[in-house]
Image: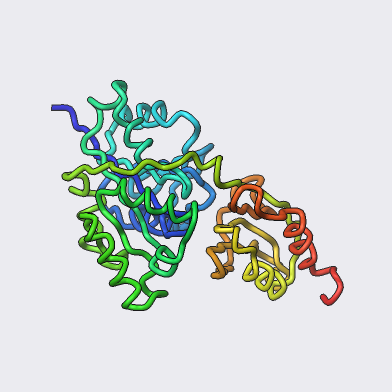
Length: 310
């Protein structure tokens, strides 16, 4: 019988920790051959020691895994991956934070693919620090992504209180959704690359993201003052849910800085492996028509090392 790789769709709201989970899968795959398709290819931060080679749209790892940029035609890309020899044992699809994982599952069931793939499961990552605090359309989206899940992974537990984690787990259990902590590595590995989809749910229906959210890329020529940049990013409008990118900062003249923003949490670190065209660019996702993007761009420009107060 021809091997049919299983598929795990990694879903979750903006900044929930999807990429962290995918990176763990890539770095700890061991002898497994795993292929990963990811919407936001620039967010994958694979350990440089694992990278065997980089090609257009593909990172090949020394352990036989690959990470590919997810383009418009998901079905065609999956079809090409499952035809490769030697075959991959598992395929992971990281969905956008504003996407419908149920729609991806349905696409993977198209006649062109369904006889080539094994079990298709949806794993939804939940941010323990803020999932229950979301409201309005963002909460509706996050709840719909959860309803589509076969397994919920509770992320950022180290940043949340035990009560927050327990409440989130209880809410999932009440809906019949199995939960695991992101830090529970052995169980997580078995579930994500094993039998997560033995009980397929697929209840969620997510409203088209374009009706609710907008995606804006702002050019931010550096070098920037690190403290000023951190202050601006920590005070983003409440309608901005995610920020990421790469900038140059005066305090690191020999390196670029990777920026990750989720709510009021700002993470700035030395970056490696920046793709072409990504430097001096910050990408934000916010509620459509509710954010003054030119004003934010002006505040970021004011962080320049040559600006007044430098």
